[in-house]
Image (cartoon, rainbow, N blue to C red):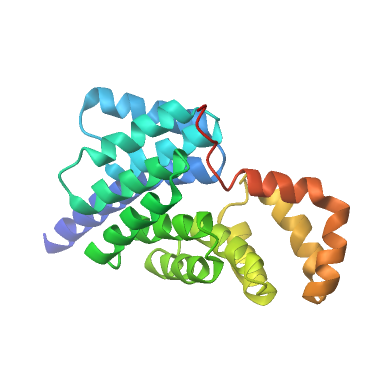
Length: 230
């Protein structure tokens, strides 16, 4: 009897984890339209987990639909939970290019819950937008410790370390990103950069990057929300 109960609990928890991971896996595979459709269908049936809403907002940004992205982040702002409220405000402010306000909101979120995955992830993004790459790298690295399965924490950690001229750490985090998200849209650009940097100093790496600047430009374009129309 006890074994049956334990098995039922295991199956229930496994199913719950799988449902929670579904949007994350879609996002990591670049299936943005599928993700937002999934979130929309679930919303028609009842409340949606804030994690889903957050990833839906970033999916809309990837699809260059800034208005829909801000609408998703505004849903988070409207929640009673202070951490998600601040995360939503920070994400919406970044979409509007109000970087300082975004940093303040993300800082509040981490102060309220230092071990919140998306609070740390959002703070890392805010640090990048204010060009504080050393702090961004530290925060993204912490996010990988909070949830070692979240591929984009490794992706952005690698980028932040690249900007901070820490190519050893960049290679480390991007290698894990490639393992966790083999279908990610950024995979080709990351692999090209990894091949170029392997065995080279930062100075020689800077020189060789010129040969594939178009890949770097695409990589960086995916890193920042679009500017408002006005």
